Image (cartoon, rainbow, N blue to C red):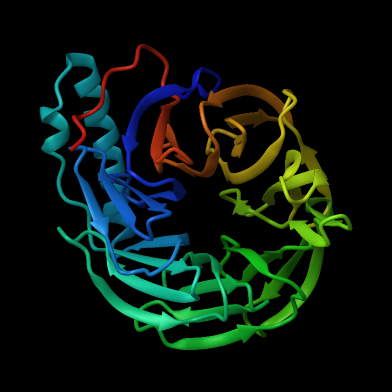
Length: 368
């Protein structure tokens, strides 16, 4: 049984450069992290093996993945979970190493220089397969449609762009934002895309027409600081629940100092049909930003944030029922496909994995 209230550190994967982002792959075998040394690191959760993906010339924040065989990926997830529980019970990692290979996996990553790179992420030593100059300025985020055919990207040029995932061909540009676009997410129905910008404007795009049909008001995430003459805020993370009835947005509010990023983390939940927001705030007094948010299948909203330290917050029915203290700034969050663990990317170069399974923690595989 999943118990997010008891979430605790399971293992950490260390890298020599501060981390920016993290993503589990759809099969749950790999954890991918991006770092300030311009690399992406792949950690094999079965063996602990670390593999570098080198090809970007600047920082990577946006990463999205798509399995070549989604049904097979789900089988691997289930098999992985079963074997992991058995291995924990008998204290052996041999059962984990016997898990079959996952199906082909496409990873697309976007960097500070506006470039998108395609990778065959299951390769023994992944190399760039395709490079596209996508945006003028930082690619802030990327997302892949539910059918695995379309890639969405957004950036500092105020644009959202759609691409054919199979060949990288540009399909459409969505114009309408008046500031840096920080995030994109596909609605589970595949007919809509949402994008959120620096000034707290969230647009709902009809993908049939390419037109914005409405805006969600997330301006609580935006502030102009006259002292430093700078805007601060933005939609730092976006996620839909499985049915597409709720959209979660993460960021910073109550900003008093733009230069130092002094403010409070917050999650806004938007009712997809009505567009009405609900605020989720941590119980503890914390200065910083909510950098990642996701929905757990059991009905929890989970977010990670950072300031002088890091936090993971867990809400159920709008109540902050649990808080996990992370020793350093947490810059991103990813939930494992089987719902048993969550990962955070940290400023000290560690990807920390927390288990939500009850019982004692059993050491993971030796890290290489």
